[in-house]
Amino acid sequence: MILVTGATGNFGGAVIDFLQAEKKDLGIAALLRDKSKGPELRSRNIDIRQGDYNDPHSLLKAFQGVRKLLLVSGNDVQNREQQHRNVIDAAKKARVNHIVYTSFMRKTNNQNNPLGIVGISHINTEKYLKESGIDYTILQNALYFEALPGFLGEEVFEKGIYLPAGQGKVACVLREEMAAAAASVLAHEGHANREYIIANTRNYSMHDVAKQLSHISGKNVEYTPAEPAEFINVLSMEGLPEENIKGIMAFCDAISKGEFETNTTDIEKLLGREPTSLAGFITITFGPEKGRQGEQGF
Ligand code: NAP
Image 1 (spheres, rainbow, N blue to C red):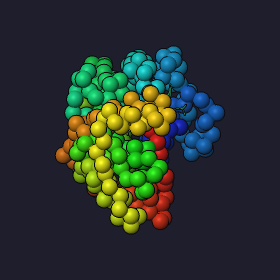
Image 2: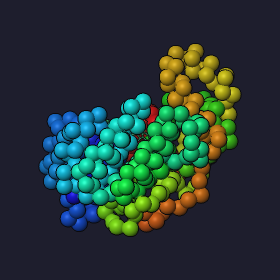
Image 3: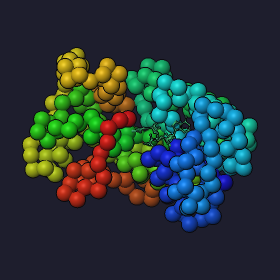
Image 4: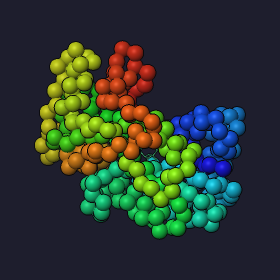
């Protein structure tokens, strides 16, 4: 039995879709904290298990008979390190053989990570998982392409890109392709005690993003690197809450420092093809036949 956590979310939901598409008799279970969200999954023969990352007892019960488990990192950033420990501890007690964890890519592998608690909670979870004695696979996911529009702002075609991201580059990937890579790790053997960087095979600067936006719109979209202090002033004047400003600044700082730049090709091996490019994402999101909207958030 393979259990997927975060099954009601974008990532976990897509992983379940890909696992079912494998057409193997894998035996798939989904962890839901709110069982009322389960009927659609149940109608597809997914075994529904109730459990909350904050409730160790519920997790132990939910993990009975599970062989492999996908731990989708929580979105309660302040508390998720303890939540992840709860999941790992319960999995150990329930004799789960293998945990696959959705972590985050980075260059700074210590407490000085520019993302602060976002990065440190991943670093500490990886360490805890490795020390648990359970087989692990760590997926150091890149920034979702879907997170980009939140940085660009709604008036990007009129005002251009204004961000304190310097000349940094990012190797973004479509969330769905990261989910496909995770499903491949879950459905096949040979990934125990491995770490993969799930990033694009190409790195993109904000100038590259501006170029693609110009191409799709026929407008002249330019990138102007912002001075951090000036940028904070602009966002404050616009009335953005301090917490949000801190979040955007941390991500831009990380981009400018090259935290999301890499030359690995792990994703190609897991997908069996190249991931979608920046041009592909811009077409999907902003082109005349856009199939998906970009979204806010990290
Ligand atoms: P999402 O749609 O917000 O899904 C989060 C999932 O986690 C939901 O199913 C949610 O369940 C579940 N969850 C949250 N707290 C829980 C708890 N205490 N106990 C049990 N389940 C809990 O996020 P996503 O887009 O799928 O992304 C997955 C994760 O990737 C996020 O949680 C975050 O850590 C990380 N992330 C990465 C990037 C990136 O760029 N790489 C961007 C955004 C997020 P409910 O339905 O009950 O709420």
